[in-house]
Image (cartoon, rainbow, N blue to C red; front, side, top):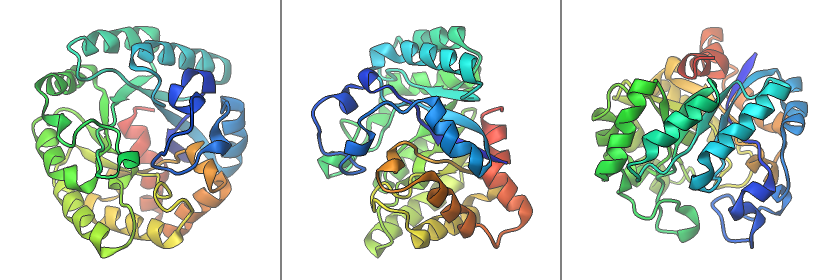
Length: 293
């Protein structure tokens, strides 16, 4: 059994970034995914591979429609039984964010957390946040603190140069679980990328309330790279241990360069020599515990 701890469903009409004019994006040209990607298609790809549960992670609907996104997903779940849990979004730089959390929680008990992407890069098409240090904003921090009472996770998405600030954020909120998206956004196996990634990941691993999501390793190379996947998997297991590592796809984004069978096969191969208990943690148990599945 596999839990997909990071997948998306979407209707193109709900996503201005997808439905509007093509603009450069971190994952490259995205013509193949400029269409609806609904639960039936996802399940047709996932179930034959042994994926028995999935966590939906927000797809950047307009922030003012964050509750609408959750309402739609609740309808999808009622009809299909999927997803098993939802990570939504909210304007975390607004003092009204707790009202959004409450409204989302009132819609469905599937809510497990929130994500607002903080990653910033010198290359414009790689950045999402307006500045590299937005996580120091006092309103943002108050909203992160509010997640503790809800028992929600925060999906943390940063580049290695931001990890020093991320360590401070995590340490200041010990009662919140931070899920590090895409294993820390390693761009390539070049030393110029690996060195800061390694330093930042080791520092984050020292924080017990950080778990790492083994996902998105084609984001920058735009292919399934077995060497990159194996390197990231081994490194994260060394630093975090299997009980703080979880597998996730990034479908349908990854449909730009691969199919789900190839992707899941690459991750299975990367962990094939690990103990059965390690594989069980990565592919199922960590996600089940973190997202309360």
